[in-house]
Image (cartoon, rainbow, N blue to C red; front, side):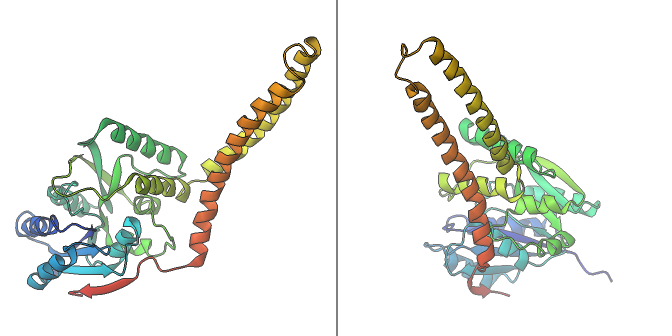
Length: 315
C-alpha cells in the first residue's frame, strides 16, 4: 500500500483575527473535496500580532491536528517570517505563501498539485490581473520588469510567493544563508522545471493591508540588490561618464568665456553653480545606492537568527 502524499501550506499572519478562521476553513474544505486524496499540514506563522490572532490560532489548532502554529517573539518582517515557516512545514510539496486574507485564491491549489504531479518542481501563480489602483499596479509591473532585466537569471514576472514547490526545492533553499531572504528570487535561482498559472489577484475582503509604503520600498530594494550587481555597475559607468562630460563642459565654458570675456557673468560662476548642484545630487544618489549594498553586507556578517520563536503549537 502506497502512502498518501502530503502538501504543506504556510500562512503568515500579523493582526489577522478577522481572516484566519475563514482561511483555515477554506483549506480544510479543499482537502475534503478536490484534494481529498492528499494529506496536508497547514502552518500559521504569527509575527507577534497585537490583536486576538494568536488566541484564535490556538483554538483552531486544538480542534484540528492538521494545523500547526509558530508564534514569533516579535515582528521580524514578512520575508523572514515566510522563510522560517517554509523551512518548518512538512510535506512532499509546499505552498510557501497562502495569505490569510485569501487575495491569492486557494482554489488554484488543485491545479498547482496537478502540474506538480505532471513533473514540475515549481508551479507559480501569475498575477495576470490585479484588483488594485492603477498607480500601484503600474509600479509593481515596472519593478518586476526591472528585477528580471537586471538579474542574471529569469525571475517570473508578476509572480509572488504564491507557489507550490517540491520538497527537493525546499531542501535546496536550506543551503541559502541570507539574512533578508527574497523567497521568490531564491526559488527562481534554484532553476528547477517550472510552470506558471495565471489568475486574478483579488481585492482584500476583510481587515487592512499590513504592507506600508516603506515596507514595499524596502522589499523592492532587497529584491534589486539581492540578485543583481547591475545597479552598482551602472553607478560606476555613470561616474566615469560624468567625469568625461565634466571635462567637455569645462572646455566649452572656457571657449565661451574667451569669446565673451566678462560679459555674461563673473568668470566661473555659471559653471560652478551648475556643477555643484549636478554633481552633489549624483554623489548623494550613488552614495545611497552603495550604502544599500553595505547595509546588506553588514546585516549578513552579523549572523543574527532570522526569527526567534516564542512557541510552537501542535508540533
